[in-house]
Image 1 (cartoon, helix red, strand yellow):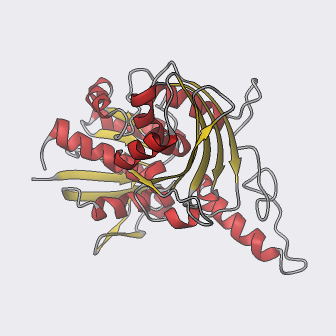
Image 2 (tube, helix red, strand yellow):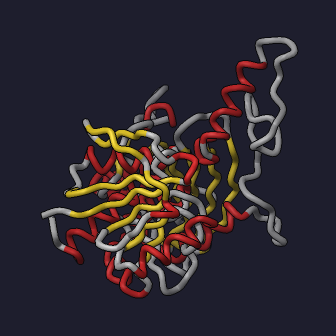
Length: 340
């Protein structure tokens, strides 16, 4: 016996990935519903070898459904997640709406799986920000060994993190560079993204940090350890899919780079590609479509007493969003609902 599963936002980048990953990981689905806004009603999406028609989320009755994966943004989630939860359907939400609610668990399965039991508080589980998810997967096994005091992270985030409009803008601007008179002005992003980098993701806060940077700090503390100090600089780069991060870690205890490499090789969800030769590391292009978080460039930082540097790359549409949501659904199935 399997589950009745809803994917809300099924026509978007993340929603389509959720459908793909549910099939790829052979999640025990008895029945599936694909939802989106009314304008997408009747659109066809793929689930394995099946084609299913998208239904209007406004008219959908969640009664009798077990799990709903939401990828519809905060405004729509605010309306429909409580409806689903009230109907007895557990919501796994990819928006930022519920991440900072102390009663709602924020989960990365490789890091804090036991938090899944707290879904009962409001029948809602939050999925973290894409940049946070891959980072805490890499930090967790190292934190268990040597206790992390401080993290300094610089992110290099792909345009798919801004949705289809971001990907289209990069594509159109790149083409326009080669055709005089066909230049495309910045619309989705604050400045030209083609052949450029933009040190702003989301809005600025009074502190001078952007909201994306604040999210990484707050979410790391909630998921991993509130005692860890985190500072982030988040940058948008002209890459279609795949987020990269340069992470500097200061530990309470000394951790040798070779031991760190061995620890990460054994950790769940991580692939270490770390050869000290040209090309002996992973780049965003190489991680697209993969489930893993890739770690490279592991080395001692001799400027602090117990420091380590590493390079972390992951498919942001997968581990940063859709895959993590499906892994949470698997946790629910294995530890709580136990139908499959």
